[in-house]
Every structure is written in structure tokens, then in C-alpha cells.
Image 1 (cartoon, helix red, strand yellow):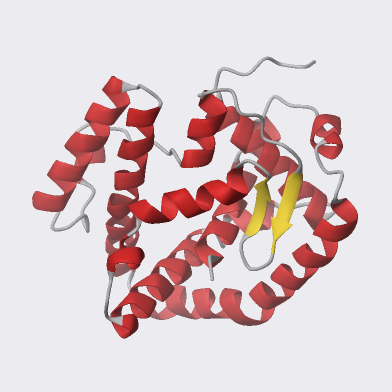
Image 2 (image 1 turned 120 degrees about the vertical axis):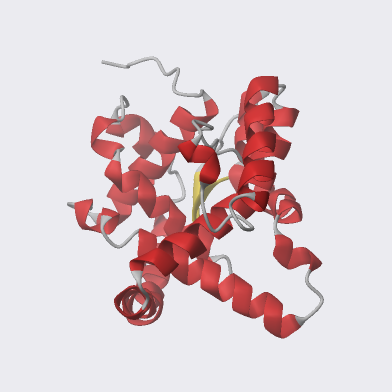
Length: 229
């Protein structure tokens, strides 16, 4: 279950109020709302009664230093995907920074538990294959809500399969170790979003949809977005 990919989208709530886009544009990108809404309700219910309480418990019993280390560890793993997609987007500078971050954090940062790279001024990218397709001109297509995976688009949804090849779980043979590592990643991601979730206002489905679409366009265009107003 790709819980981490679902709840990671809530992180855009922290910046949505500053995004330079019109809400109407997001609405026009959701022709399948009648199907998306029930799926969203299902996802939200599972989160409310299962994942969120677990994340809150994890945050309560785990020392902040340990939480930070675990979060940094998974971000370091994520830099592999960032590097691959920066190469595919022909961004040599960003790819070089990703490489440097991986080397520094994996060695001096003890497998990434300490984010030495950021302290050295090596800023982290946030790239995925959906953004790579967008970079090369592939349109996002309609907005879709995927069971247990959350918000996506017709372009981004199949791209998640490609992204899975840059994640360690695919290459772990021990099922117990693989599931435990994946579960910890999910809980860590959800716990990191507890504060951002408080910024949601109005209709939750609409808020998350608009935030997701705005954030994706912003990322695909590397922040170079034309203001519609």
C-alpha cells in the first residue's frame, strides 16, 4: 500500500495559500469528481481511524532526535530517485548536487541519518518520473484519486511504477524486513505531516485537490509559473 505517497501530498497544504494559481483551473481538471470523491472518503476514513493514530503514537513515544534521524535516512534514499530524474531532465547541476548529497550523507552522515549535505549548502531536489514526463511536454491529464494511494493525475499515476525502481523495497528479498522498513517510512511520512494538516480549511477534498494540482504544476515548471491574475 502506497500510504506514504498519499499522505505526502498533504505537505503542500503548508504552501497552498501562496501558490499563484486560480482554483477554477483545478476544478476544470477534475472531470471524474463523482468517482474521486467516494475514493477520497474511503482513504480519509482509513487514515482517521488507522494511520493517523499510529503516527501520533509514534511521534509521542519517539525522541525528536530519533525521529529526525529516521526522516533523514528515508530522504537520503529518496535522493536516488531525485538524481535519476534530474539526469533524465538534462539538469547536470542538480544531478551533481544530488550525487554529492548521496555521497556525503551516506558516508559522513552515517547512511543518511544526519543530513550533512544540507548543512554544507547542498539543497535537496524533489523530482519524480511524473515531473520528468511533464518536463518533456506530457500533459497532466485529469485528476484522479487512487485507493490507498491518494491524489494523482492520469500522467502521474503510472509514473509511480517507474519511480518504484528507485526505491529499496523492490530489491529486498526478506519480506519481514521489507515490510517493516516500508511501514516505518509510511509512519514517518505521516507523522511529519500532522502539523501541516491543520492548515486544511473548507471542503477537504477540494482543498487537497487544488493544492495537489497547483503544487505539481509548480514543481514541473521549477517554480517558473505564469500568474493567471
